[in-house]
Length: 247
Image 1 (cartoon, rainbow, N blue to C red):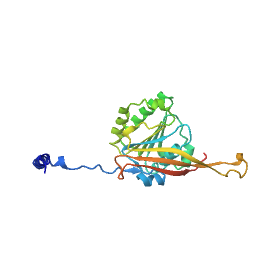
Image 2 (image 1 turned 120 degrees about the vertical axis):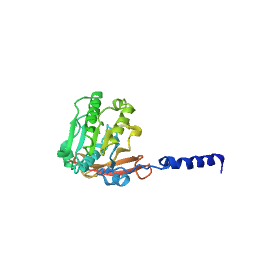
Image 3 (image 1 turned 90 degrees about the vertical axis):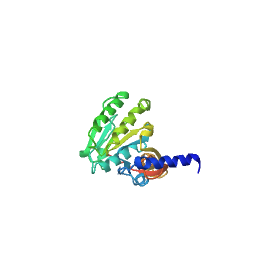
Image 4 (image 1 turned 135 degrees about the horizontal axis):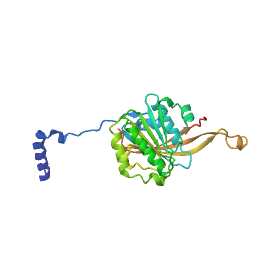
């Protein structure tokens, strides 16, 4: 036994009786989760974590399935909980959401009226007010996907840490929809969404092009799991097929 090991053993032996908690390994209990509404995602991470920040990241210039995933999540959550959607750019379509199963009677829809930086400030102010409801919501979704990335990137990291500190004390899932990753290490879960192959009602060569109707597209989801999940952190790609719903 080396001298350093001997000294450490002696110190621990003397302190164990006086300060037993100093040598007890405390484990953070598993977080409660809310289903995302997509089975493949739920099988990977068990649902969206409560008491934490989740970020849905997708390009804003093309269809990516971000709105679909947001609607599916709200559809699951509003069956048992009252939820809130803070819509920074007033892009939420209640008819389409209702067709996907969202219970609008249990959804607080906050429509921001500003543009660019003003819309971002209004969304954060509303998020602060809703978070003061002391955990009365199952899901609080803040949709910033329509705000230009150059404005979202100006949000200081201290703001995201403040949101994380508040949500950790509640049993609410706080979800930010963005076009680029901005929450950094403050989020427990990051889902990156991207559209792949487009599906049509008819294949090429079977009938005129104008007779073909959009039938859906494959959604590739990259899942990044964070500290509180039971499984080790890794990324996984899943291909999902989303179908259009007409309001």
